[in-house]
Image (cartoon, rainbow, N blue to C red; front, side):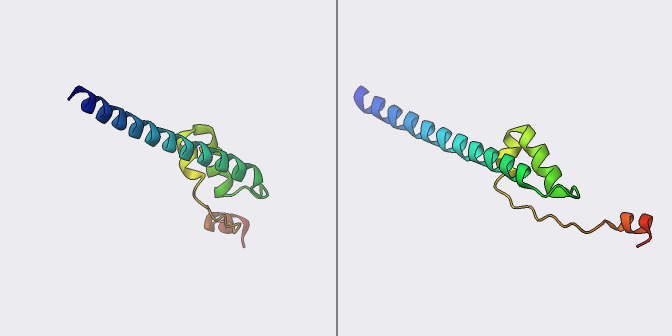
Length: 87
C-alpha cells in the first residue's frame, strides 16, 4: 500500500511541476514578446501601444500577459487635441 501511495504522490508532484514550467514559459515568452513590440513600435507620435507595451515590459507579470495581446495604435489626434489646435 505504501508504494502505491508513493507513486500517486510522485505523479501529483510531476503534474504540478509540469504546470509550473508551462506557466513560467508562457509568461517568459509573453514578456519577451512585449519587449520586442515596445522596441518595434512607431514612436512618432507616441500612442497608446507604445505606452502600454513599455509600461508592461517594466512590470514583469503584466508584461507576460500584454505581450500576447495585439494593441492597435491609432495615430489620430484626440478630440481635446483637435479643439486645442483648431482642427
